Length: 206
Length: 119
Image 1 (cartoon, each protein chain N blue to C red):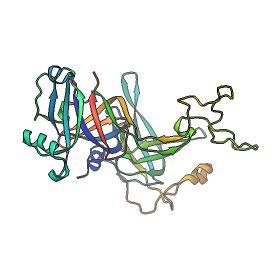
Image 2 (image 1 turned 45 degrees about the vertical axis):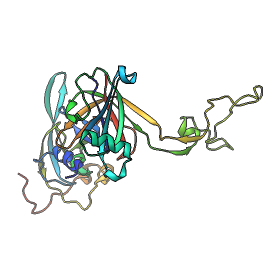
Image 3 (image 1 turned 30 degrees about the horizontal axis):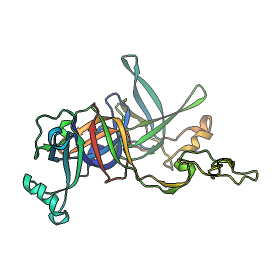
Image 4 (image 1 turned 180 degrees about the vertical axis):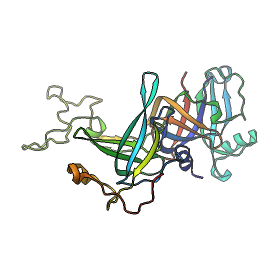
């Protein structure tokens, strides 16, 4: 069974491991989530689980969504995401998912929208090297040559300045360091994409 | 309570003695050798305390065989077995970086007169 949750990035801190090392951790508020729909191979052509997370005022969501939650008899939720169903057997709409499904030591993939960097140059966007700062150089942060005169055009995929960040990014194989059940919080080792309060999805590694 | 305060509190030790820059401390550091753990003493003058909460660190300086040695430890690190204040120093600043440039007697920190005796 693939364990999955929707959550919110709260920020980073550090904690001490048992053998005295300080471990950088990201604090994630995850769940409680409600299963809103179970998609099956026969009915929908593929197998998936749709879950919802986050408090929202009833007048802030549209009518079709309101219907989903009314039918289940739960409070309306703000965020709805779908996960591939990898062997979920005994799951039904209305089921509650919390951080309790995860244990310390589990590996998870965390995905979210990365921080937007605006219009960025080649040095920042594509990790290009800078040119010389001095000795008459006028090529400190420029992209350099973008092609030959022979082809008389610029090939597709040429690395040039442009919008950077605000992409869907997944961090894989992050270790769960701590599960705080009363607070609906889990701590994962390392960083995850996005700003604080950013909505992220957590999925166990299969 | 804020979740960060809660995590911070869980990672803090409660039995840390009071000490500031200028004090001489003796600490026992847990050293892992293979699968054995032994403690190693380190005695020196605290030259700075930095940070706050569970992330606070301090730097201890000693002169060993004529070579200055500085080690920085997280105060709440489980690898520190204990901290013992040997002597209270009389200093006028919070960061004693000037000790690095001094040798011999000049590099000594005066003992605080009528200081409360460290236990």
